[in-house]
Image 1 (cartoon, rainbow, N blue to C red):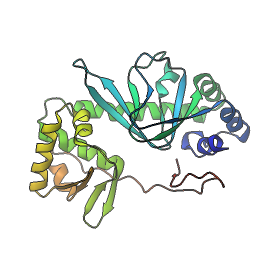
Image 2: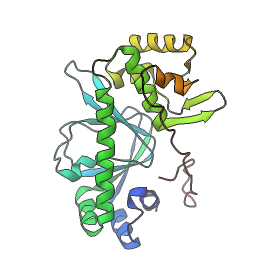
Image 3: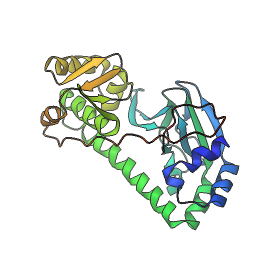
Length: 253
């Protein structure tokens, strides 16, 4: 019942019939991952697609010096590992739980069969892959020939577009990230990010407090790097959970 509910409320699968949803749920598997545990590693077989039911996942690529470069953060309701649907046979990156997470594994062959039956689902998967690739490419391009200050600002603008919430004081980035997380996302050191954040705070552009960042003036911050002011995401819609679920705070996927 729990798997069916999460799958049914994933926007990617909204166009499927009740029978198709039941078949997908029958083959799905639900797994729980503690914080900092690996969902998959590079070279693991790409035989599943993943739906994050609860928690947060980060997708990372190992660097030549043994560190990690964060490619993306996955939020509840999002699909990841989708490149298995376009010919990937082994994972290139690794996925790690940033917080205790519940993940639903969807067999690749089952999704491929549904895509063959549903052009709308096939189009949705194609758009998802394109959207995620564009976000990753935009972030990587932002690392080229940019100062550390510009890299941090571009990252904050990107996070505002994905997690920004308007408040009376400014735009709150509703995601908990350490200075090391921010550094890994832009290829810098933790110390460098700490210094830049301190400078931006002294300039009155941001406020830093306990793993949370508040952008005081989004337009001024964007102007610092001659970037367009990002559009904030729509507030999540939260449907009721199935009776007896015991899970609180899930949102419309």
